[in-house]
Figure 1 (cartoon, one colour):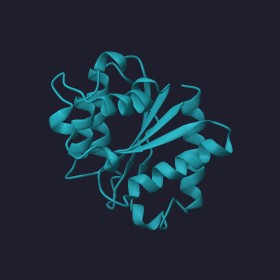
Figure 2 (figure 1 turned 90 degrees about the vertical axis):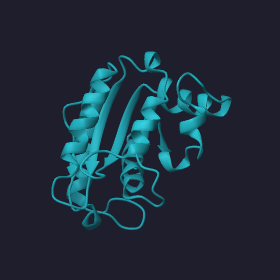
Figure 3 (figure 1 turned 180 degrees about the vertical axis):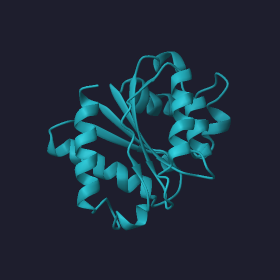
Figure 4 (figure 1 turned 120 degrees about the horizontal axis):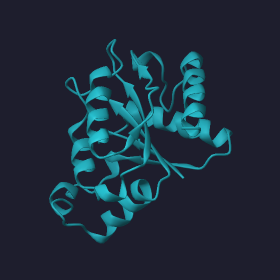
Length: 172
């Protein structure tokens, strides 16, 4: 299974809309995928699931979306020139040994013109440190508000770009 991580805890996020578009692309190609939106993490996960502590529900959630996933796609919005803090806290809470050797793909998005370039660079370094391979094709979706509607990406050029990249990622 492919896990798609909407990497923010913001309600009704643009990241989730991009994740939904990726899931629809996979569905059309007969590939199973599931979305984890970090907005659905337990409110107290940082305090109850760090430094070697874990609750049974959180272990089940991280096993399903991270440890058991064959590949992981991170949809990363730019927050203050980097990636969201909740994503860092989530990564810090994981069993890193179960993640080593996994393959990942990063998709950045921003309101501005960089498409979260720095966020993708920063997060790539974190994943490499954890021995998680990162696919080299990292779409940067700039001016995201112009590419989406209330539920998903509607810009056809962006959809085609994502279709091509996700096909390549499946062969990675």
